[in-house]
Image 1: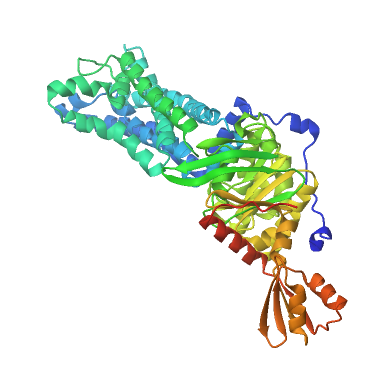
Image 2 (image 1 turned 180 degrees about the vertical axis):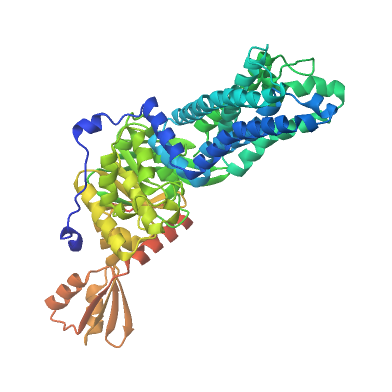
Length: 281
Length: 305
């Protein structure tokens, strides 16, 4: 071992005692770390751009083309047009984008192996889940509520050329519009939970799409007596009750439906939290 | 300081780690040796709480790892080269981990410099070679200026220069009084880097021994000699624990005595020696013999003298 003793010594940078005293893991720091994780990946920006553009983009396109073609449209088609819901239908695409992003935030770390570095840094683990949830749902909420309102006003402005607009003061309209942002926020939370449970990006995206889009299609094939009882409780059907102006016995009332959707997301998150603590990383 | 006692890890019916107890002391480099699949990585993951032991306890600096309020200052771990997200740059990867406990960007840059990744700090790690990935992992392990370092096969994928660099780094870290626990499946590498060895096979402890003792044992093997008076010397050498074999005319093979002792005996009886050659089994051979035997029979403690 003589070669080692004569080896050039390596100058290892060390921290000052003052710095060391402050190396505690705090919730704020974990949130900051998760926020940095999110914005330092290109996939985040691409998916986020898709999510942000989809609601106003599709909304304005629908309102503009409808206003343009209105005079040429057949009466049946005119009757079918919903000036509130149709311009907001971009949320269908946005929910997929947020679903994919939520899954990437959790399951993506497992696929990459990054989760081991993360849990070595935050061995209590749960703060990581709550930080991801907090960062992602906050971003969804603060972007999508204003964007939904923006989309509503721009599209109504376009529709007003044909006097087929609906006003903000109309009962249930404000709730429906803001409901788009709220619905997407809870969908984002659901995706975070599913990603953490399934820990595989492809599998979790499959589960998210299955629950949000496929389940209602399958359930609609049930005989009506069964379907009417079951369909309204499914996550996306319940959540979208918040965005509908009319309600009947096949749907839940808006806030009740939204509450049910929240419970689905909470169930997924609780399962994720339990598994996160219990399973080997 | 790492203290494992009675660690067991089962994967279904399969026992990955079987009643493993050991202590890793500060101020020295402790090598963690075993063939592939011996349970080294599993043990290391249990130390930092990534895997929960099926039974047994392991503490770091007196507490379970997860109980430490400043975990990155207690333990820095390199568990596998690819505990990173390929889409993130090297610097961002370190910044993200540093943020969890308020480590500054200045520290991140210092470490990038230490491991020689400053030039590629803003490149995404997906394009990194295995060796660059290892260097990034080492920088990540050192973020919190940790008292204990746990490195799983750190020389994997490094070029000879990189291996030498790691060797110097580990020794320097130990000299500063840190606990350094390094796994490897290469005995020759550990003989050069470590002061102490913990050897496991099939999840069980085979040896807990200083490198010096291990080397001495491995090298006290056989001595070949040539003398015109072979018969008389053979009679003088034979005794309890000593085996002498006549190889051919005038050639003997002695097991159980050092070449020094044989030379002295020959001199005392005025027997001329024409050759006296100690044959050291290589450390690698000694290690393989040790692990081979122990996975098939009972684990034997190698007594540290």
